[in-house]
Length: 551
Image (cartoon, rainbow, N blue to C red; front, top):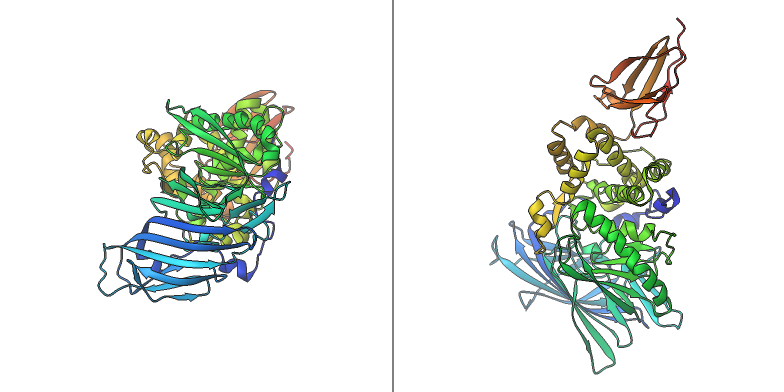
């Protein structure tokens, strides 16, 4: 069962960070020079030298001009040097200042034009200080001394190792990767393997094609002398697609044991949320020298095969969940990152309910409750970059508080409406459940999640989202006993409306009590045993009881 410690392992431990980390943040306010174009395709051709710990190659971007601008900007960390840059095949001027590349737009270019930029570059990429929380390249070795390499860059963006438009609001529709490594190694990355060819110089080039839109931080290299395990999997749609486990040779037996159990996780997600979104490519799990990450179609797994007796592994389960919450449904601004992390964390509690029963579900939620900070809104209205939402504002709350918000939303809606809404949050249009042409992938935000819940429920939920997501403090339930009367009243930040219903158990009998005006008075026996919210459905501050009044 996932513990608070397990959840905390998924977030940064430094609450403030450094100025350099802030500079490396992804997203934030989209500058005009990047708002003026949309990426359609990336092609990354890269040679990896494990001995020197260097990379060299080129990135070609195809894009469309969507606004008038005299220059555009790409992102590429200053550690990497650009040898040349071309616009539509012709050498072009550029300025590489800090971590940004400025490229003049030809005077002949017009809004609506498609163009191509090729950047030839090389260098020693940043070594990840503490992957996956502080990203970069991880250069390790296997038991026999072979290279074991991985990239991770969620917080910083892919510009740590290849030129890109580093903003969550723009995904390429497709991407190709041509990765050259020493011939004894295997490169596992996103998408589908097109070719794997030996070269005369003792290297091998892997060509992988990504046929669905993908966030740049989800593009990941995983390089080692992997043993490749393969299984066919039948989706809930009836389609059969290939799943892969790329394991270190010394752990092949452990991977063989874990693989079918991990596919049980996949079955759970499909049954609750709808089909696996990337059936036209693969579902891949790759053993990594860091804990884990949700890289699209190639989940990074570094939890040491610590499966519980029933086959549950919290790390794999969480990262797999991001194929829906993060990869299928993506926040276009990091201010809505709770959609990725909070709903995904909640799915783990639902899995406990599915496999171990209701009490296990409630126990999981109570454990998740311990670390709430409530220092700021989980979903601020203002644009945020990855550093701000992760380090400065929400921290663990985008995980644990986000999960509790879903838990309390379930109480409000009831199971039938809640699970219908949850599936629509993943696939708003049921027709998209049968699609794998890329159009199933979409951007979302807090207001869309609210609208979906309201549409299913048939009632306004503005009060719920305002109190729980738009500001930090929790509501408090004030209980007052006087003789045979029990008064319950919500005390909310800034006096916000909060008609949250509550469950009350009186002498062993439970009832759902509506509080349409934020308070209610119940008649109870003088000596009645009363329990308010006995199963802890409501996200609230510690209960506050007014002094019991005498008759």
